[in-house]
Length: 369
Image (cartoon, rainbow, N blue to C red; front, top):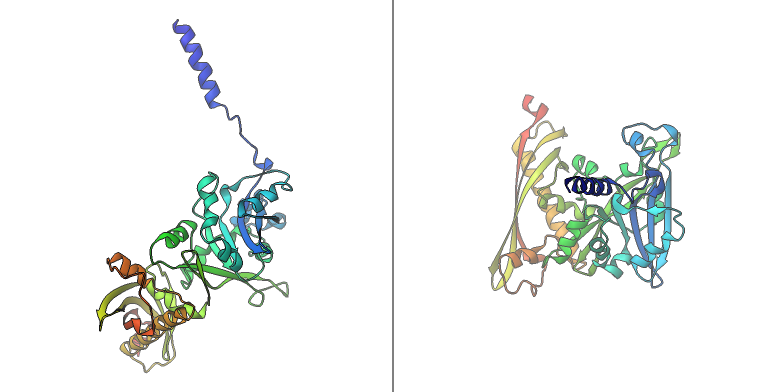
């Protein structure tokens, strides 16, 4: 009896340890980015596929073997899911979706779909909530085919790893799928989707232009309402309202100051029966370039404070022109239990006071003056 039970247990263990549906890496295709466009009442889905056999060495700095190959597939359908499914017909191999690092949407796709695109994420277990979300006013195919440096993997671009650029120059914060859904579902919140373009002039290789990806602005989305696009320069005030800003520079008359880790605070009160908002920002940093050696540290701090105030107000007012609540004032009211948070009509005067305190920690050569 004991022997029979032992044999039975061993047989069960052998069955459990078997990888019945295991696939070799060479038998799978790995999409690393998905793009969606909407034209003529049809969705157009794009997928970027790379040769993962070359990725390991290229990500470690190796450029041998010609670099990773890139393919872009395209399908059409009445829904995003059907459009992606159309690609299966010509894929030749099974598509494995767990390595998708980015979603890229055109303006028309965001207008048509809103938050519906993420329905597949919740229903299909291979998808994750960590991919980056981008928009574009250009060609998805061209963006997917734009390479990195030294024949490195396309993953090593702003599309696949935007956080690397953001740590060096914090201007427009990258957005993940899970954050995007939170913004769309949170009452009074506005989602800011970074948009990509192709810069064809900044870099050269072997005396030829070498195009590179660049974040050039944001799509502004509130719930399922696409409100418009704002350029890189128009959203300069956002960096001062984001606690995750790692490093960003402000140019004044006397110096260029590198600032980090702002501490913004939004306060709402009532004045003459109207809701008004006050913003306070504290930020620290150091001088990286001095244009006038006769200017004191206190004067440079004052100049930086005035420039930051100007940028915060300018971004707010540019947002108003497209009906956008750039600093989520309505969400602030919702969290403070204002019953009329949905009915408030924002205007230029709704943003009342902006207080900024800049602390220069290191002055460099200025200390020697």
